[in-house]
Length: 560
Image 1 (cartoon, rainbow, N blue to C red):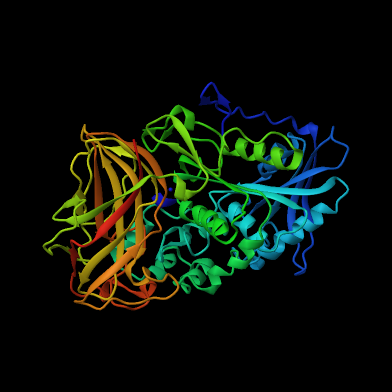
Image 2 (cartoon, rainbow, N blue to C red):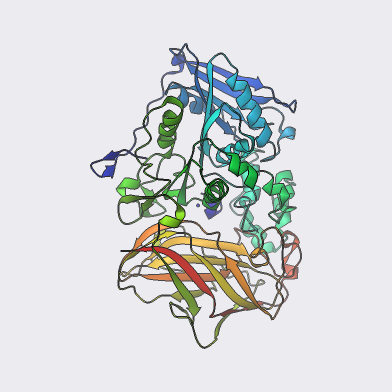
C-alpha cells in the first residue's frame, strides 16, 4: 500500500539491551472466554475476549487492548500476553466488528463505547478495579478518544503510533491518501485484496478520486463518507480531546512512534496538545528509527535498507508492559525514560533525553531557496525558479517516494532540487523542519511535496523526512482558501515528521520540492472545485509555478 502507511531497553554499561519476548504459555494454562458481549449505554454490545491465567485466582489489574481489526482466533494472543504478566487480558472489538458490521462507524463511538467497556471491566470479580490500555494505530487513537472523559478505573494509557483522524489519516495536511480506500476495503469489509494495478489504473484513466472504488466494482461507504470532509472540521475534531479535555487528563501516559511512521505527526500532535493545555501533564514520549510496525512492536534491524543503530533495536511492546507494571504494580520506571522526551539519534548509537521538545535543540538553521541552492543568507536580489506540471502527461510522475532510506540515485520526477554547500562541522537534526514557501501559480490550488535528504560525501542519499500538504489549507486546515492565479502567495508549513540524525562534516542537505502527480495520493488539478471530484478534464493547461527565492525552511539542530 501507500509508502506512508507501511511511514526500551535497559541501561547496561552505557547501552540499551534488546528486550526478550516472553514465550506464550500452552493453551491449557489459560481460561479464555470468547465472544463475551459487553453492554454499552447505546444498546449496542461490544464483542470481547477475556483471558486469565488459571493459576491466578485473586482479582488483578486488567489490560485492555481495544481494536478495530478482527483477524482470527489468534487475536486472543494479545490477551495471553497480558495474562502471562499476571494481568487479566481483554481484547475488545469496535462496535459492529464480529457482530453486525452495519453498526460500524470508524472513529465515531470510541469516546463513549470504551468508557462503558472499562466501566464493565472494573466491576467484574476478576478485576481489582484498575485498568490500563496499550496498543498502536487505531488502537492508539481509541485511547485518546477514551480520555476525553476518563473513567476513574483507567489508570494509564500507552498510545503507540496513534493516528489522529482527519489529521494524518485518511488525509495528511488535507491531502487525501489512497489508504482511505485500502484500509476499510482490506481490514473492515474483508473483500478480495485490491489489485496492485488499481491506483495505476486510476492514474491512467484520470477519473475523479471519489470514483476510485468503482474500479473495485462497488461504492465503499467509509471511503465516500470521509471524502465529504476535506476540511479538518468538527467531524474530525470531535473525535479527539478538546483543549479543556486535554487540561483534565491527569493519568500518566507513554506515547511511542517512529521517524518513518505514517502516523507520526498525529502521535506527536497528541503529545504537543496535551502539554500545551496541561502544564503538569505526566506524559512521556519515545521515538526512534521505526516505521508504523516498529513504533508499536519490535524494531526492524534493517529498516528500508538502513541498518539501525544497535541501541535502537528494542521492543516497543515490551516497553509498554514495563510501563504498565510501573503504573499498575508499582515496579520501577523503565530505565529508558530518563526525561519526558526520549529519542534515538541515528548515526550515534545513543539515546538522548530532554524535558520538552523546546529543550532538545540549541539552534535553528534557516535556508533560503535560491537558484537551486539552500543558502543561509537572505537573497538581496529577488529571483524565482520555474516549474511546469502537465497533468495530462501520464508518462511522468511527480513523486518524492523512494523505497529505501539510504539509496544512490534521486529521481527528480519533474521537481526542483535545492542543495546546501558541504558542512564544515557536524551537527544533529532534532525535530520537525518547518518553512514558508513563496510561490506564484497559474491555477487556484496545488498539493505540495517537500522532502528533505542528507547527501552523504560518498554520493548516497539519506531520506530524512517530508512535508505534504494542500496550499489552500496551509493557513487554516479547517477552511479552504483558494489561491489567486498570478498572485504571489505565502504558503507556510509546519506539520512534518520529527527526525533525529547526526549530519557529519562533508555532508549536504537537499530539499526536493514538487507538486504532486502520482498514483498514491489524490491529484489536485487546481480548478478550485472539490478536489475529490476533479478529473483529468479539469486539468486544462499545464500548471506553471514560480518558486520565489524568499522561500525558506528552518531546521532545528543541536550543534556539536
